[in-house]
Length: 198
Image (cartoon, rainbow, N blue to C red; front, side, top):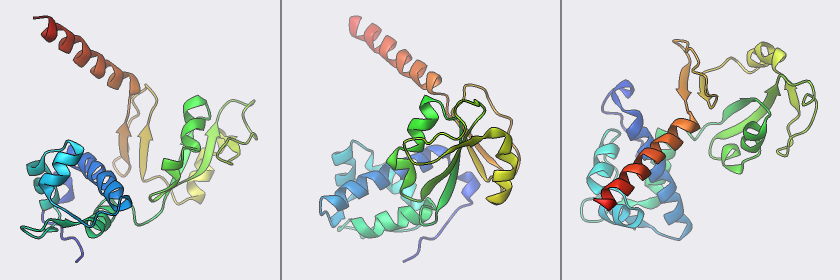
């Protein structure tokens, strides 16, 4: 059964989409272990999730389980792959061949599951023409416009730089500031320590 979208995509929160990715990883692990069916409660218990939240998130896209039986692990995994658009290849262009860019360019998780890093660019003349561990050759950021044109434009940007980029209405922009996430963890560690000492 193909999934059925019940509500407009714009009204689905990023938190819901993030959880779908978590569910997909859980199902991939279950499938690898030979699991065939699982209930939302078993899924929640096994992976420290919330069963009501799982059911609510999946209900945005259709009805996938059988009451009293649960979900077919393989079928639900396939539905999530389709919902997340991972059934088609997404070509990734990496800008910045520093430590982070080089590490990401040859990280196997970015070259599987629907993604393929096709180019890495940098402005440092000492890096141009050098091969990175993933096998790509560092190209000049000066050629960015031409490379993007050859690859039919940019549809989305994932920004790891601390600078906030200005978005374009036709391009989905997601900023990921690693320092902000570390500060978030620091906040919880600080307040957890204070609560423990009360």
